[in-house]
Structures are given as structure tokens and as C-alpha cells.
Image (tube, rainbow, N blue to C red; front, side, top):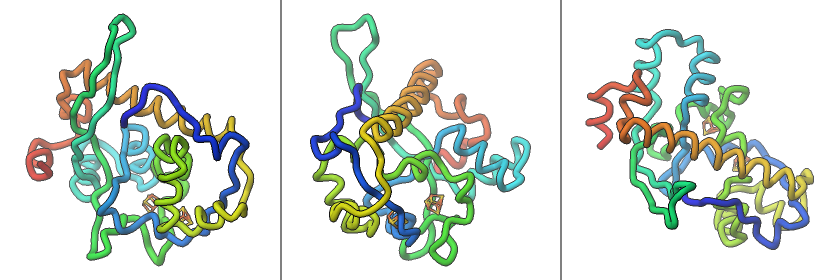
Length: 202
Ligand code: SF4
Ligand code: SF4
């Protein structure tokens, strides 16, 4: 969470070719990253898994979710300058020595239809679309990106890439503004998150 506008790197000006190989490699080994979860992601997953009520959501959160410290650059429309805010957000907790997502089974996503936005919009994350360096770095992990760098895969136009990256920014902005309104108290934004869980993860 960092940017105020979507920058598209030169190499994506004319679009990109990319096809996911469904290898599951991006669903494990999270030492270098997180899978962020926002309210819509959690509610979509809960519905898919037939989880209902506050207690159900609390159990889901205790088992599959962790609290992450995050940051977001924000400039109020009336202000001359902005600043970076630090606050808490939610993401998947990982499991096993290879730190895999709980929903990865036999290298397949078992919640594919209800997967979080961040999984859905890969590789068109803001940090990827603004920097070829990040694409090259992530290609070490992702065979779909390795093929993409050779010019192979399904074609996505610049407009499509921009649409995904903008959608990611909008989700982050919406969450930030909700947190700001609630004095950055995550328990107010997510009433199903328990105090114990919050303390445990920090
Ligand atoms: S939800 Fe699915 S796609 Fe996302 S990290 Fe977990 S297994 Fe991978
Ligand atoms: S690592 Fe790349 S190719 Fe493999 S599942 Fe993830 S996005 Fe698809």
C-alpha cells in the first residue's frame, strides 16, 4: 500500500502476455510477502465455505487470518502535502514449513471461485505494473511470468492492466479511509476480530 496514482512501466505500455500455469508456487513461501484480505474477501470466502454469524467469522479469522502492520501514503484533498500512515490490516496466516496458504491442496487453490482480490488480480498488482524490475524478480517464483517475459501467454491490453491496478488501489484506499474514520482501531472495522487475536499477532 503506497501509491497515489497508477504508474505503468514502459514495458507494459503495449500490454502484456501472461497465462497462469496453475502451479501453486505463488501460494507458498511467503517469507517475502503477504496475501492481504479485505472485508469483501473475507465475506466472500466465508459465504463460499458456508460460514455464518459473528462466531463463525471469529473462528475463521482465528484459524486462517493474521494481523499485519501496513502503511499507506495519503494526501487529503485540501492538503498541500501527504504522509505515510502506519496501521494494521488483515492477511492470510500461512502453514507448514513451506509457509503455504491453508487453501492450497495438491498445488491447487480449493477456494478458486472465492479467492481474495490479491490472488485474482495477479500479476497486475500496482508494484508489478509500475516496475519491470519487480516483474523480473517475481518471475523467479512464477513460471507464468517467465513465459510472459519470453512473450508467451494470453494478451492483456494496457487498459486491462490499468483497470486491475486501479481496482487494487481503490480497495486499499477504501480500507484506509475506514480505518482513519475509526481512529485506526481495527477492532471497530472488523467486529469479528478478537482482542486476543490482535494481541497474539503483534
Ligand atoms: S486463496 Fe488460493 S490462490 Fe490465494 S493464496 Fe490461497 S491457495 Fe493461492
Ligand atoms: S506462480 Fe504464477 S503460474 Fe504458478 S500459480 Fe502462481 S501465478 Fe500461476
